Length: 512
Image 1 (cartoon, rainbow, N blue to C red):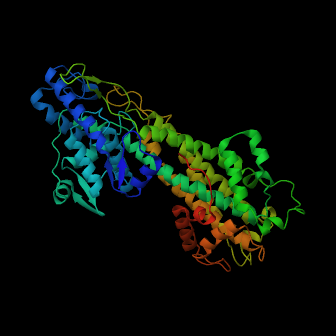
Image 2 (spheres, rainbow, N blue to C red):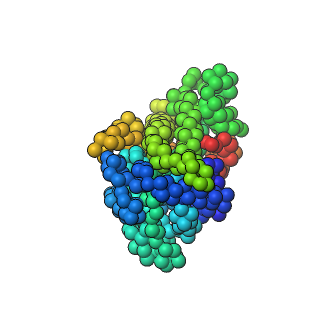
Image 3 (cartoon, one colour):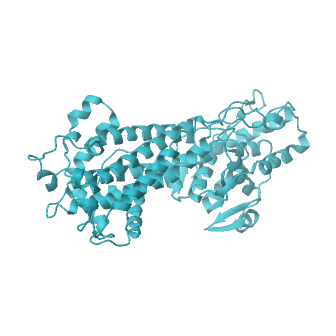
């Protein structure tokens, strides 16, 4: 069970929630929620027009709503805004979105009642995940459509996933012993406003990008060994002069991965090549830059995940109602998330791009010194010819998807919301990019291990031999051509699981 302390949730805790761990709020947040709800009651009693509490929304903010219609107002905004489209979002992403929303509401700035927070928490604990279409948000004013689908499920409308079964929301709540929510003043807007859908998608991609990055360091080292590349470019003196933290750390990791290699020792003195191709030699510079960018994205997303992106925000005054204030602002604008998502896209794209170049180098005998296409009988067999083509296709797809989403904006709500972030799409497209890059790195793993084995009886380092053994436990060496797809699937599973880095004992500081 993960205990969420609003404003202080760690990267690893968000990752655990995404992986399926149940989550609860720290009880210390309860007084803040109660005080905020009481402040909304006092604001309503004053009778003054306050956006989102007793007015219409967006372009209709000037329309005053009568007190006896405030509950209907909140229900209407949920139902009207539940206008998403596309396939259902992955359950882990929506669980993470729910936890992000829960931690935001619990900071006592949104004006929701304790019962509302309790229902969202209970759904998260009991594994009730609203069905949320993946498309329909422009990332301001908040992720309205996705969060509306979440909220609709809370009031008994729409569908909910329960242990992989899609059920009507009202039935799922009843079976779990939960009552559908009747929304109070501001609660519909509080639940809809926010960047939690965009942030959840971006964080989910970051979790995958971290595993991808670590795997690509191992496969990059294996490719260097297969091509009998030099470890001189990883000398710490080179990287200390440039001063980039990620570059220094990547070089150190590559040195550690190759330490004690008999393959490397076999050509230390008589290597005819003065310099290796960039795909080998410049790994610290490229992968180090990717690491720095991923870390910056992580910093941004952790800040966003622990912040409040509602509007208007409720600031509690004294117990007699003095100075209770609802302030309208723009914390729902997901520009920070959009920038972070674009940064992740660039890093993921480049990780796959340089890995594909190493595959291309390995299958070319003029560059690698290995048999053509890494097959003992080229001509009769095609070996790794087409897997390299597949890698090229995937890298090309990622290059197209890496175009920044944050530079686009289409005005909405009759030009009231005239600049938007497109963070939701920018974050959502990352899952496909990470999957593409995982497949590329999996192909490199197969090719690099095959290449290293042409140097037998020479072995690589203990770390890289351990990584090779993980692959060979599932995929035998390629002799004559065989159905290649199952080999690729097995290698992809290892990449997604982070099995290579674990086997190699890769010691690299995390993103957070």
